[in-house]
Image (cartoon, rainbow, N blue to C red):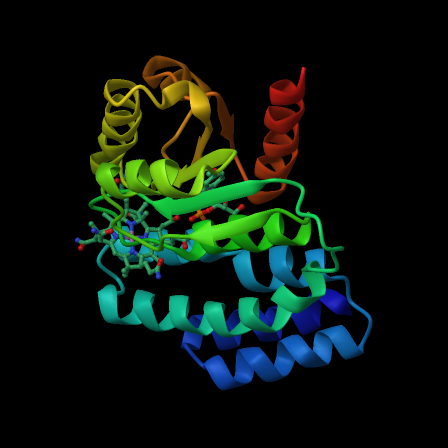
Length: 216
Ligand code: B1M
């Protein structure tokens, strides 16, 4: 029953019907479906199928963009349901999709879940150059830098960001967590990141672990 309903959300998302996605997401909440279920089985599930069609040239960038926009409409409805925090943040995180990369859906979900876990999150958006991360470390002293990459061609920008932090003597002032579809633990190790997370929920767990390790 709930799966039929969530399929309606997926269908509206695939068609790019943002208004429909928002309406159905609200309706799913009213029906008592969990936020996690709506996010994972309604909005995220079958996004890979869109990727496969895109790869096979069965659909093109405009259709993928429209589906992505519709997905954001659903995420915006869910976001307030993740956040119920007191005054003191769990920690301060600066997040961004790295230079050369415009994908932001996964990054936005990670950001939303971190906020839900009471982190203060500063979102630098997409296509963030290493120098911008450096500037924020210099001016805002975050506890954690969180970098997202969806393209094999943008993974190198994560390495470049860590390099500029090292060169400016600030690498040890901040913890670094990375993620995104092409990222692996061995890649994270190879570039000297502190942590890797395969999905948004794991990113929250890893961020908490990193903060605890700082307090030791
Ligand atoms: Co692009 N794209 N895309 N795309 N796109 C992929 C990534 C691709 C796999 C599609 C394919 O060929 N099958 C492929 C990459 C191949 C590769 O490098 N290995 C690809 C390509 C090639 C491209 C272009 C180069 C296409 C072109 O122009 N010829 C181009 C690049 C533009 C650029 O960035 N410079 C491009 C453009 C686009 C759109 C703009 C049209 C659109 C993005 C819109 C947007 O984001 N606002 C788009 C989309 C939507 C996709 C797919 C279909 C879906 C991505 C997505 O949102 N997934 C994607 C195919 C796919 O993923 N199967 C594809 C849903 C999202 C929830 O998952 O982002 O993986 P994801 O996030 C997860 C985890 O990865 C993790 O948690 C999230 C939630 O659990 N995670 C983190 C993410 N960041 C994290 C950070 C963390 C921890 C966990 O810590 C900090």
